Image (cartoon, rainbow, N blue to C red):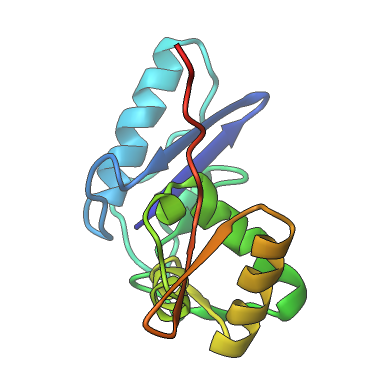
Length: 155
């Protein structure tokens, strides 16, 4: 999953690769197309070379405040215990807990997002989230599952 965030003045555009595939070879073309659209919308953008490279002066360096996040191409980062709750909330907002999930499934999903967590820490935070009713907890065959209970609408 890649995220491209371009901020020009007060305008910000965010592109998520869940919408389409972006790799190191196509990222320059994506940025070029966005730049053209912004120019048509009267945004002032500095021109840049059409040669795109990784780790060298490239199209991203010509854009102020541009960020690229590609966890599948980078090394995952360790998440300290005090930041883990926020990362789990991100999973929850992205509907990960719409189905019951085990601690190991949660740890694997966090890794897919580029975050390494201690399974024991994840278990503790998930239990606290269940206790505070942010998530629900269920058990089956000595395995705990965490999920979000959808509210039923009465007609």
